[in-house]
Amino acid sequence: MADANLGSFGRYAGPATLILSSLADGPKHGYALTKDIEEFAGLRLAPGTMYEALTRLEGQGMIKSLPAQDRRKPYELTAAGAAALQAHLDDQRRVAEVGLRRLKAAGGTA
Image (cartoon, rainbow, N blue to C red; front, top):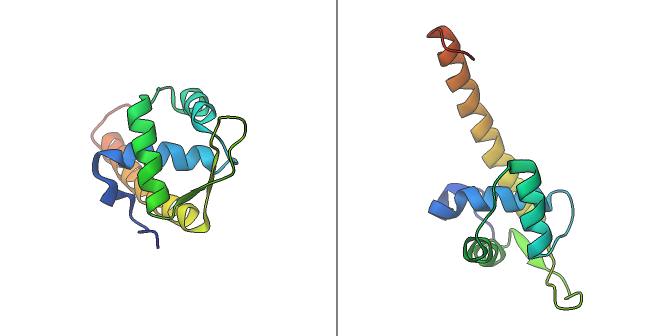
């Protein structure tokens, strides 16, 4: 059963968020995940970071592997993973809104 709190992933919470967000658009294998994350987030996950996060996400039931295509192993988002991602992104939205509001009140550029 997935823990609906990606914060339990420690230093892998960021990569987990990126991977789950990518898989929300449909199943992908590692290379396709890397390219998609580069495109929408502007950063590249190192292979070790990517595959460690995939292993953790699969172990938590947030993603599942699909039958291999050639030598590529695709993954897809599970319902538990979608719920965890939604909860995490909602929390992050609240934090961002507070930060932006406080910057604006302080005369920042927000």
